Image 1 (tube, rainbow, N blue to C red):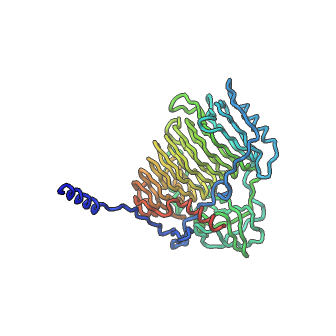
Image 2 (cartoon, rainbow, N blue to C red; image 1 turned 135 degrees about the vertical axis):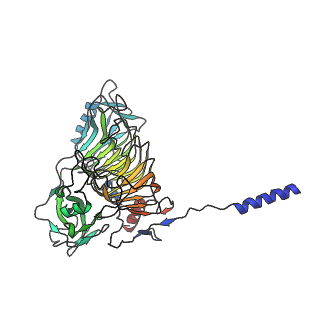
Image 3 (tube, one colour; image 1 turned 120 degrees about the vertical axis):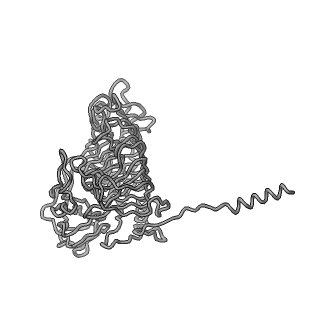
Length: 506
């Protein structure tokens, strides 16, 4: 009997002492989730809101990546290199007409090892390279030569349509808005491709203090004509002289800094609807610090609406995927960049590098990189890195230099740093790395998120990890909410924005 009483008492004690642990959920003061899942954006005192980052990637997320039918099948040359074999197959498919869906077809690379001593190029729209899986189809950059292995490349340049430039009339265009008033909208119609042009000015650079970078050998102070920014957009609606566009403004545009203009634009030489998927891509190398071997696995130059999915790369010196500034609306997903081989110093190991506009990087992994998920100079958003992991990192994630605009780092996990800061005289004068840079629910060793002296703000929402002052002391702190507090709602800003938009469009 006594034994039963003791057991009962112990059970009661355990029951009383047990306290269920509930994660405390919280929302940012800038974004509220409505009962129906839509989002309510709360403006700051200037009217800025967190921009909608959902209009990025392949067809801005409005179209699923296609499963393009196979039009040609190739087998690896087991007795030598496969470069000529692959290039001939691509050139053959390039001569075919585009089908109604805008594709020529998929080239299936059957199981095997494809040795490539040079570069494979795709210069026509509608061509997809597909392997049979990372454990089956393997491409190898053989021999020496610092190069990109697979290059998707169009031609031409972004061109202004003569006589269409008009001034934006608003004294202040806030971040996050989709509309503004111009002096004369009669030259435009819905569907027009335009550029929102924001000039660089001497006063803006002076207020940023980027004419006062502490000099060392090679340091260049910022020059106004080097910061004329061209944001590519499309008109969705015109009401009188009010113009609505397909993607938000991601940088404050103020008349005191030259205001902004719009003009019709074209880029006829870009190729589109191309992709690479389901394969392993590797570079040969001589030593861990070898610099004379495969540098970039997949490169996009002058491309629109393209994708990379389900690839794993290893041993390249620079990147798994690198998107040039003249490319946009590209999705890179479900891929890995492993074990870079190079000297660990500047200009190396940028695993997933983005210099373009409206691009999406999601569900990625990187090891042994310096800048795992990174943007370059004057990279114009929105752009998104979502659900990405970095381990054994040797530097930091984030905007790298010279005023990247409008990037979301959403659910990034790293054993290193994410930094948004004044990089000072690093490089040739990197200076302020970016503005409207948003960290959302990220996990870091430590982070520095600072606001530039002028021109906008940067944000850290629910960042878990240390906070430090960055490279240079005395820079203004960015907007931080609930550091080291989990439970932010929504868990992913990008997914919530995408779902909210699609629901509203039904």
